[in-house]
Structure formats: C-alpha cells, structure tokens
Image (cartoon, rainbow, N blue to C red; front, side):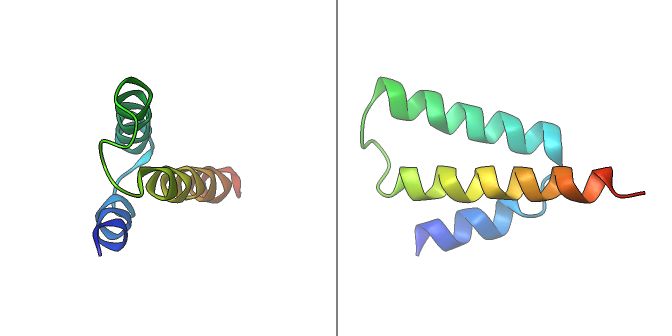
Length: 60
C-alpha cells in the first residue's frame, strides 16, 4: 500500500528533511484537497515520526 511505503521511506529521514516533506504534503493537501488518497493518514504518520525523533534527540 502507498501509505506503508511512504512511511517506510520517511522513517529513514532526519528532522529537517522530514519536516520539509510533511510541510510540503500538508500544503499540497490544502491547495488541492484529496489529490493523494489517504494523505491525512500519511501526514499523521509523518508527524508521529517527527515527534518520536525529537523525543530520541532530547535523551542524554
């Protein structure tokens, strides 16, 4: 499924590139609603990857 492939590939990205990908997909979704199927679920997955990455970085 597309959603699983996108999340697998994006799990290897670091914070700045992951943020740019998430922001880009969000802006595309705002301009053209439902351009990509299941984009809302993809965005939620990308946001959770970003938050998990921040949590790992803050540990001493």
